Length: 465
Image (cartoon, rainbow, N blue to C red; front, side, top):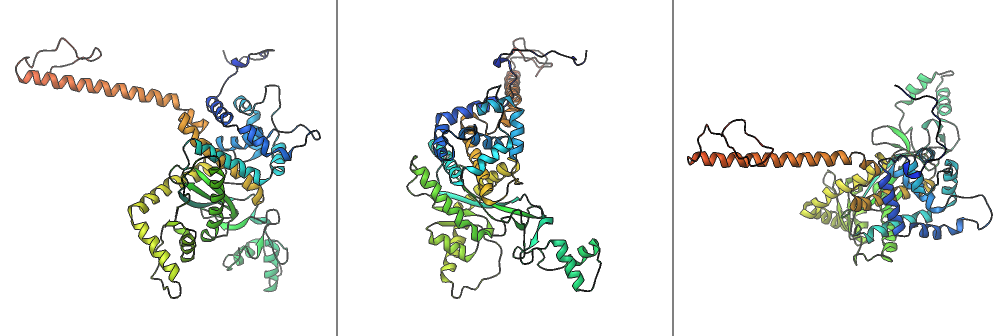
């Protein structure tokens, strides 16, 4: 009884006898998909300039490095330290990376060093390569694009912000203001009370974080004020694939940030069109929420040759004197949004664009960033979204987009089987009762008689009809 103590370990064990996790079939098929499309050959060619031929310590192969970042999406891990810890504890992930049982997994510092050395353009090439895989699988159209943005909490604290002009911290600044007003020794509570109603106290023009200058003070989705970054997605509304992602300052408005995202979208689709046949005219329609609605933005979208389907916020009657082009673009967008196509695109945007955000930053675990600088963050986010796009291919081929989806697959299968059997039994019983009632009505059987031949061997009547 109880736990066996002082158990002697086995000296030899066959690899086929090792315990496997429920996610093992998923990663096995994901490796087959990557090998089928030549993933390792492609990334080795792209990263050749970052590796020395003879000098230096043994490094992490490019295919293993990018698989490490893909694990961050599929396992919902936000930090590179967490990825390294998870790999050291999982035989399934070691096999996915191609590590033997006697090999040590990469340390988090090795992952970080590879990320710093490999250029962001290489990460963008890998993201575009995954888009080409989607194109070969029929999961990319590129004609109707939905754009939306969200905030990512930065790896920097509000307590560390300093003045841009003097370099003093927030507490020092409040103390100087108190002394100027005649209070020589104010307490921390008095300083907070005095600062509570001061206007413009969190302006990004006055304050910055010395550890992460790219982080901006902004209000998060839950109402809290943090240092954050802005991630903007461009999603193919017909398939749900992410065709572009950009990292921008959190204080930049949606009407100013969408042009950079559209530029990245055109570059990615042009790169994919070199290998995969896409529709002749890509990026024809732009769908967005009301945060992107303004006269200047709609005019710019029209100048780019796109049809806009941007939700219109409630506003008072506007004056268009001297802005005829903006007026025409706004009214044309209003007519399109009232039509059946505009309503359909609005439903698609709520379904597919928001879904990409939820899978990437909520279940994907990247709502809080553990990196600093837009360049470093963009490298991680690009491969993270490449994992999301690969999950679309896996869902089409395998039926599951993440390894966690396999956990309850057997239970769901048994539940569907029992539901089907129960429905068939109920149908047999209903049919038998109807036939027996009809027979009783024409006088072939008496109401008190019982049937001797059953319509199904597992059915029995407790009473007559």
